[in-house]
Image (cartoon, rainbow, N blue to C red; front, side):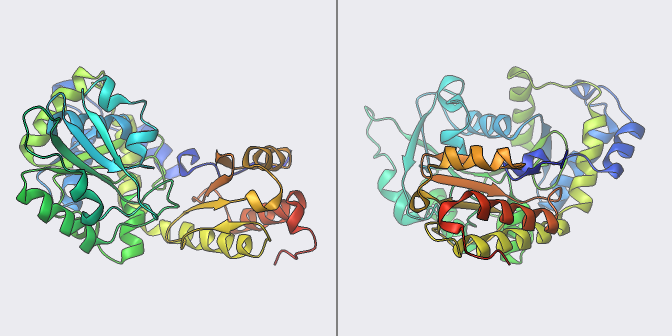
Amino acid sequence: MTPWIDLRSDTVTKPTPEMRRAMAEAEVGDDVYGEDPTVNRLEQRAAEIFEREAALFVPSGSMGNLISIRIHCDHGSEVICESRGHIFNFEMASMSAIAGCLPRPVATDDGVLTWKHIEPAIRPKIYYRAQTGLISLENTHNIAGGRVLPTEVQDQICDRAHERAIPVHLDGARIFNAALALGQSVAAITRKVDSIMFCLSKGLGAPVGSMVVGSRDFIAKARVYRKMFGGGMRQVGVLAAAGLVALEKHPPLLRRDHQKAQRLAEALREIPGVRIAHQVETNILVFDVSGTGLAAPELSARLKERGVLANAVDPNTMRMVTHYDVSEEDIERALRVLHEVVPTARGVAAR
């Protein structure tokens, strides 16, 4: 059987042979006691790379975001976020169910929150109104097609928010993709936010895990909430070892993922009825297929019948995500399949 071409997400990457060797050979200890040397080394390197005081290894990005919200906010606080953001749409309402906070979603045209969007959503200091406890940003923005938040925009948000004593958390699940697109270091583009979560298990390719990065005091509190939320882990150096390989070796590989996404975007723009709303900046494409005569779930099903996996976001919209387990040859084959199954593409030659 021809192997699947999996464009559903960069979460589907498999650990590399180097990662598997590192996992097999990892020195381990009990991380709840702080005694796993491989975890400790991973946390130290993450803190160094982001030029912060400390970092914490957590099982998932969703847990990392939830921990950060719980530290920053009191129960009954509001969290300002972009209306299509992951923290609002894809984290099981955990900020409300567990952290006791209310999301205050703000809509934008392109997924890029600015201070102009945020300021009207900040609650006035009136005792009978829920207070704004946190601003949560996302970089890159998943459902906005991998859009990058410009550093100057983020810095202005942080400056204005801090003037009002409002902390800023960054859901930086794909922050290394953003840094590559901006041509800056992850430390430079996150310098003013109060806390950062980033994933090891997306484009960086580790099988499990994310990091929370911040001040020493913040991470000490994060360790408490990680345990409270069921994230205390024991000999987890076998996973941290893969995370170290991902952190040290894989950020430069993201450039190829961006190039593959650009190739997909160029070809998709040639198909009548397909609309890519925004410039493709990283490894994610979100595109409208309503003009093709196919609903997105139907197109997803047709692609799957021919060995290509891609998800529908809603009835009109598809998402494709490139990663290191999808080759340039796979991209070309996926494009040939698209031309076979999209009615408006027939007769349009796939280059």
